[in-house]
Image 1 (cartoon, helix red, strand yellow):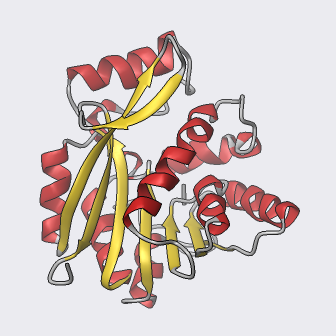
Image 2: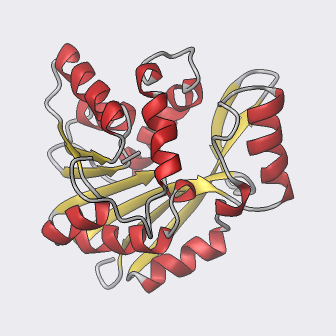
Length: 242
């Protein structure tokens, strides 16, 4: 997730930032503790690319981590700026982009601070797997609305909050299948789709689509579908610019 600038502790969780700093050396290990992100990255990129052409567009990737999504969108022709507060993760992102010959601008900066300085700048903003790791998701959503240009899209992904999501995302993924490190998620920070939709509307972002991300533990395969009971992606546009 997302330092050289001051942290907004009302929004950003320092413990969460520390978690991802500790994992920084594992970002580009496809069989490591961040394997799930490697596995779902093509689905995330396809979801975005099917709804917005990436080629030639200016994209802001908030909570870019080690650059998995940023690099994927850059390979699709986007001009990407990735921001995060986990400095060690950004060091890895810069190193990997350099090794692969990709031009991506990475900044260690608070998302609200950055978006205030770049109002109506980006064609697309992505904020994936971040909202469930911050203290005030609405503030992040409002920042996204501020920085996206009129007519642009903002994409979110997060985890629903219900008994099924607790069983699958915490008990199953962290303790039984060990797909992600224990303590990666906190159930109380999971977000119901109705809550996210309401926050988006408060920020003048109109929800266009909600799509679920599904996993079959027997086949170790992922796919997108209508069921949003656990993981889900959301496409929004600035209100009045549909």
